[in-house]
Image (cartoon, rainbow over the protein chains, first blue to last red):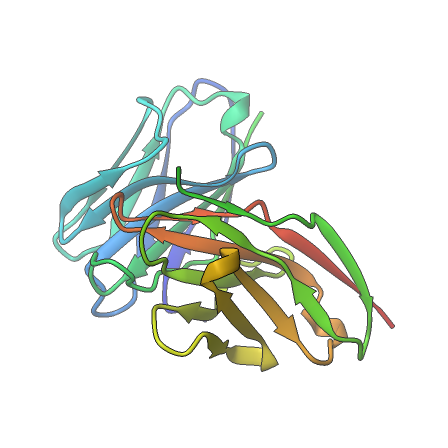
Length: 114
Length: 113
C-alpha cells in the first residue's frame, strides 16, 4: 500500500459523458501527478500539480482538466468521452517537485467508455 | 530526446532461475532512474531507484539494478525468481525539465513452476 488512494476503482460510462476521478496523496506529499495507461500508448504523463498550482503538462487533451484542492486532494475531469479514452488512470504523489523526487502511485481507476 | 527503451516485451523464466530485465535510456544529463512493478489489476509499486552514488542499487523483494553510464543502461536483476514475481516491470526516467516520469513500454514476466 503506497498511501495514495484513488476513487472509484472502476468506472463504466458512455461516449459523450463526463466523469471525475479523485486522488488523495500520501500524507505530507504536496505534489500530485496524473498518468494514463493504455494498450497503444503505454504509460503517459498527463499533468502535475504542486500545492494547488499546475506545474507541468504532458499529453493531456483539451477535454481533460484537473485541479488540486486546498486539502491537497486532486481531481481529474474527463469530458466528451470517446471510446479511445478507455484506460487505466493513475495518480502519483511526491513530497516535492524537485528533480529526482520519488513518485508513489495509487491503485488506479479503470475507465471503460462504451 | 529523452526516452526509455525496454527491448524485451515478454520474458519467461523458470522458478528459481536468475532474471535480468533490460532497460536503456536516453538523457542528456545525470539520469534519475526507477524500476516499478505492476501486478495484474494493481497499481505501480516502486522496486528501487537510482539517483547518484553507488551504481549497484538494492531494492525490495530481492531485486537489484546496476547503472552503467557507458552503456546508458539500468538493468534489473534477481538471482532466484519466485512465482509471485510474475508481473509487468517498468523502467522509468525522471525528466526534471518537465516534472514527469518517462516510462518504457514494460516487460511482462511469466514464471514457470
